Image (cartoon, rainbow, N blue to C red; front, side):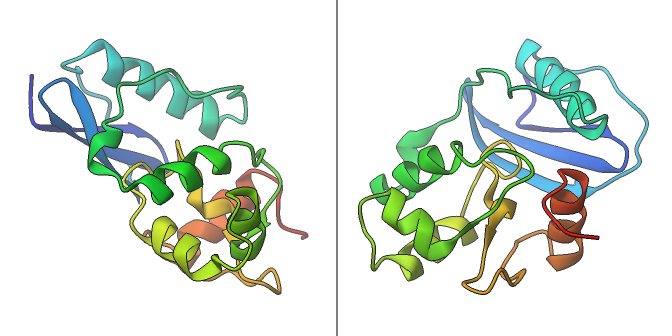
Length: 156
């Protein structure tokens, strides 16, 4: 197995980093690379899901072997709560903090989202500022806007 590989479904690409048999990081980016052969069944499943996401047909991301042992406990809780935020909707940092049982923890949620090792699958792009401002996203605000628009969360 390779240490990393890139999967694509234009215009999105994901670079997966592996350690042993666990996914330790995903990098989300705009990409238009041709498909390639994938070294694992998980990478193939993720590519199929990414294609379905781009086509607006994804119901659920596949069950993948994410390594949460490298993620601090509060960040793990925030990411898992974040999965309750459905496509086409957003949540503020403060609202997500409340969902985690820490109503004054907006900054902690912000840090958790800024260091999210599994973007798109754990959809940190759905977290917005208190006034629904598009702030803070590792892939850049243009990519965040694209993802939210694609999911129908932004008013035209």
